[in-house]
Picture 1: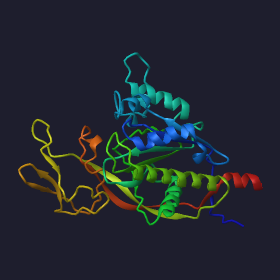
Picture 2: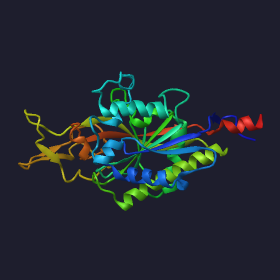
Picture 3: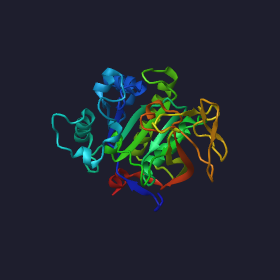
Picture 4: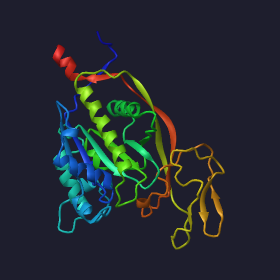
Length: 319
């Protein structure tokens, strides 16, 4: 006998693993290429798991992108843009990905996409959620965090009324980002790759158990909700005039309080944080974000609770 409070959810049958959304983030690229040649490790009964290289031209050049950031163009304007000769490569590629794995927002879209990324910041193995009300992905994060305990697996929630990301993985019904660092651009580190590999393994194990009918009781996870992007101090020519303070460098997910040092000018002046509440910075000194005028992002801690769920296939089999 199961509880009447269990929420049935559709089974997850179509799963994709994206690597190379940014062509110089090598862990996901190495893993996806390996799985394309030998996919036994990622296959699970009852579901299709498709490893896919999202930005092959950027991968070939080992650069973040060719014309624009592929991970920011999955919005209606770009996905609906008329294909002409001078359309940015990544916009054309986004439309192709949307055709294969979407259409975004439709019933035909893939159920789940893991999008594999590296960061130069000291973020560890981070899971990125886009929807605070998605019981399935919250339960998955809970499962992965428990499987990897006592290792810290932060969960970053990028749901925000004004910061719109339009990510590659947002094509899926359940998008999950996997952000692992620190790792320099254009470099692959065995420890970072292994951490990413384990996260994917446990995520796929969760999906398999869910599809097989295992119930997942209501759970609560701690997440870091994005609040604001913080730029470097700049002069009138828009040039950076202060760098991340040594006390802040590599301190992703650690509390930042009023008066704590943020930046250091080359003249030795310390620029301190001014704020009414404790925040938790991350993506600190991310190399790829200099062009985006972002020194770090401020987050706050909060909790997300997921309903008690099980696959609706169980109900169909017993009806």
